[in-house]
Length: 414
Ligand code: SAH
Ligand code: SF4
Image (cartoon, rainbow, N blue to C red):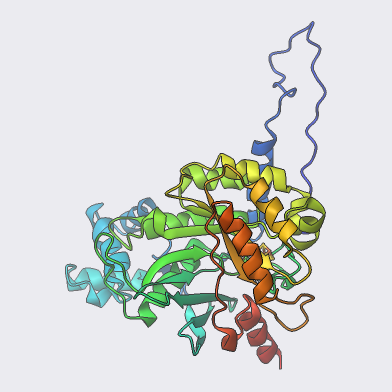
C-alpha cells in the first residue's frame, strides 16, 4: 500500500431529503471521486514541497519560473515585458548562466540583474561514465538533497535519452525498485527538474538549443528516474512546459515520455494538459501479483489503470502507450503471463517494453533468463505489439535507479 498517501476520506453520502429540496446542499449523491482523489494527491504533494529556489545569498533563481512569473519578477525590478522574452531566450535557448554573457542587454542592466537573480544549476555530486557510454549524474541541490539523472545514448545513432528524476525517494515501495527502499525526502521543484536536463546539456556542450526538430545527443526526456512523477504533478508539468517552450529548449511533447506506476486520477490530467507520451509500469497481469510488486495496485488496480490508458488523449498507432514490464525470474515471466498480457491490452495502441530486472544488493528477485524473455517477447510480438527488450545499460555504474544516491548518502554518513 502507498504508505505516505492516506486513503481518501469517504464523502458524506447522506442524500438530502428530496421532498424538501435545499438548494444550499450540494449534490452529494454523485460526488466526483476523481476530483476528490486529485485534490488529495495534490495536497499530499504540497506537504513535500521543495524549498524556495533562492540562492544562499538571497538572490532568486530565474530557472524554473514560468514565462509569466519571469515577467513578474522582472517587472518588480522595473523592467518592461519584452525583457522576459529576451532573458528567456538567453536562459533556455543559449543556455547561459552568467548575465554578463547576455550581449543584447546593456552592461548596467546585466549588473542589476546579477545583483538580484541567479541562473542556477544543480551541483554535480558524481559523474560516472559506463563502458557502454551511459552516463550517470548525481546532482546536488541547494539544500544538499541529491537525485540521479542518466544519459542513455542510442546504440546506433547520435542521439539519446535523458532520464530525469521527479522526487527524492518515493512513497510507493515497488518491491523490485531500489528507489522504493528510500523514504520520500521531498518533491523536486520545477527548477530542479528542468535543471537536471540543463546541467546534462552543459556536460555535453549542447547549447544553444537546436532549432526545430534537429536531433541532438540529448534528444529526448524520459521521466523514469527517481520518484513517481504523477505524485509531483505541478512541478513536473511546469518543468515540462518550460522544456517544450518553442523559444527555449523546444523539445516537442513527442520527445518526452512520462512513466507512471499507475496514478490513475492524474493520468488524465497529464494527457489533457501536457500531451506527452505515456509509459505505464504494469509488471504483472494479475491483481494479486501486482498488489505485491506495485503496491499502488491496491488503490488503482489493473482494470482501472488500463481504462485510464484507453482514454489517454492522443494515444494512437503513431503515438503508442508503452507498457513497461520488468522481467522477474519465476515471478511474472511465463508464457501464460505473456498471453494474459496481450489479452488485457488488446485494442490499446501500445508497445511493451520488456525490462530485464536490474539487480541491486538486497533485492529479492533475479533477472529472467534470456530464453524466457525471448519466449515472452515472441508471444507479445505475435499478437501484433512491438516488444523491444531493453538492453541492460550502465551495469558497471550502479545502474539500478537510486543506487548512486544511496551510495553517496552512505559515504557522507561514514
Ligand atoms: N515511478 C515511475 C517512474 C520511475 S521508475 C514508475 O514507476 O513508472 C521507471 C521504470 O523503472 C519503471 O517501469 C520501474 O518499474 C522500473 N524499475 C525500477 N526498478 C527497476 C529495476 N531494479 N530493474 C528494472 N526496472 C526497474
Ligand atoms: Fe517509485 Fe517507480 Fe520505484 Fe515504484 S518503480 S518505487 S513508483 S520509482
